[in-house]
Image 1 (tube, rainbow, N blue to C red):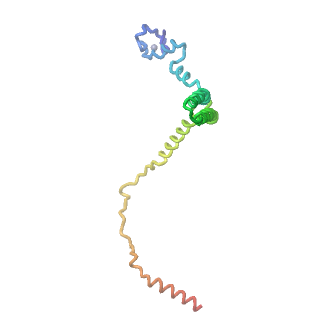
Image 2: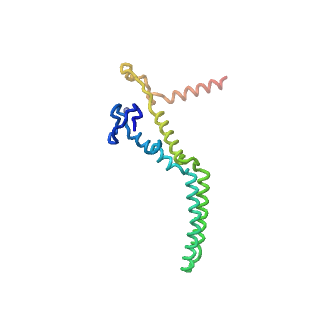
Length: 183
Ligand SMILES: [Zn+2]
């Protein structure tokens, strides 16, 4: 084979790099061996060939079909023990409804695209985005206050509540009232 970068011929398969330009040749060798398809791409397309919805439908169908296997076994056991057929009814309803609900869930909530993210994965990604945004917003803006601008708080002309004379307030109010009465 030849180097895809400079066209120099690869002398032996033992050399990983092109001896002329230093191009890594292992990937190219794999491409040639796989007929031009990269092995990693092949692996990902293979695993993601089935969509989550199809997988869910299959699971639902499997549970649904289990009804026809489990229910006869349970009924045989019930007859053998001579017990009331509650277990038969419960297992039949649970598997029948469970399978149907699994299929309905797959149809309604799971992605039909092969390798598509499920609702849970999408939700998790959204939450992560929101947290990242919040963190970015929570960071305080960089404010530079020069140290020489700092002024020490001075003691103001504060009055304590004990300085106020409650009687004076009442007197003034009474005076105001009596003035109004005179008019
Ligand atoms: Zn080369």
